[in-house]
Length: 94
Image 1 (cartoon, helix red, strand yellow):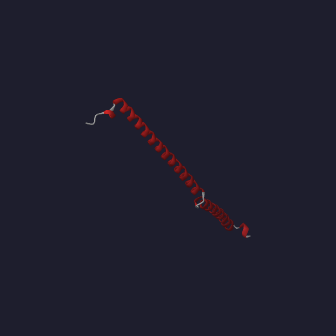
Image 2 (spheres, rainbow, N blue to C red; image 1 turned 120 degrees about the vertical axis):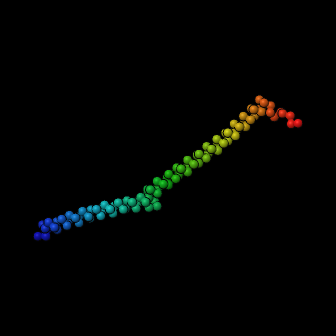
Image 3 (tube, rainbow, N blue to C red; image 1 turned 180 degrees about the horizontal axis):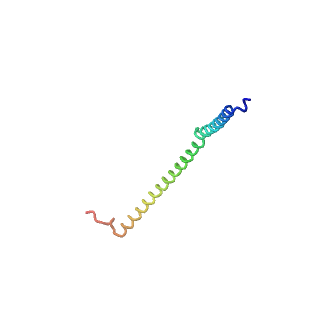
């Protein structure tokens, strides 16, 4: 009987093993395709990181503008104080 032939049984085991491996490979490829495609989770993750970095850049720019404004006000106040204390603005010109 062919079902009891050890060579056929070994061959059937090998075919079944390769069939299972092929199925696993097919699932892995599908998973990778879903991850890599333009709307896949990897692309979505990069978009989220880019949005976060853009928001941080806007915050930093706003803080820098506020800091520059505050320094300008401080410089103006200090100049006014120095002028008042030293009367530099009242020096004779001739």
